[in-house]
Length: 152
Length: 152
DNA sequence: TATTGTTATACTCTATAACTATA
DNA sequence: TATAGTTATAGAGTATAACAATA
Image (cartoon, rainbow over all chains, first blue to last red; front, side):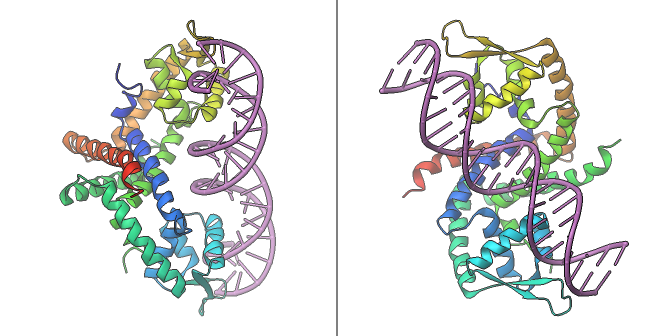
């Protein structure tokens, strides 16, 4: 007998889960050397590249529920990596901006992330990586549409 | 400006995470109609298809830490879906076997899982699905090998 | 000594209800 | 009344140390 999970391996969902789980664990290890996790790195990435965006918009872009995002921003702010500034046009809202320290840390972490990416996709050609991304995109789209078709 | 996470989208790791996260959430919803979760379904699948396997071997196949697997088996046993039987050759070990009720529930849940799979991969040809699986397999292999090469 | 299953524990991620201050 | 950010809380998944029974 080969693998006990032979029939599960036929399912894309199972393969996605197994591969992603392992990859995310390793990626967290990469970021931990910078005092970051995947979520704080991703937050920093968006804030560095989109200065002044509102907190809620950043949370939405990352598909993180707003209540959970509050503590992420707290953490990054406490570490001096970004700052909350009152939005001029809406006193309820905060605009997020990366500090110089935050930008610098992000650049270093991004380099490590790219090295990780290269190791992750080693053996895949550029067209193969593009095809992988396209397949994941299509699956994402299918999942969005399923909201409607599932209930029938 | 397009998407706030534009640069993150260039990374396979990020795409894997976003797509898989959404898919797993939906898959849990599918299994919940059978009183199952992904983990209990996967356990049931292996036990149905590999009767008499030891608890530790099943946990290992699913990459679930043994302490965490105990409560999964407890749950399935309490629901009358599988049974623990003392292994004949090793008094420490338990052999897991699905009950008739467990087999029946698994068959029904497996059908729902296949429907979910079809919706998930809608728009992908069989060769494209195979290529996706191969890419995920290669990435998994790369992740295993990185254990060695990362530290250098 | 090492291994199987177990207990206890803790940490992260995720999800929801409800509050406040503004709009 | 709705929205932005917040607080509190609860559940699932994950990870580790340590124990009893057995090998």
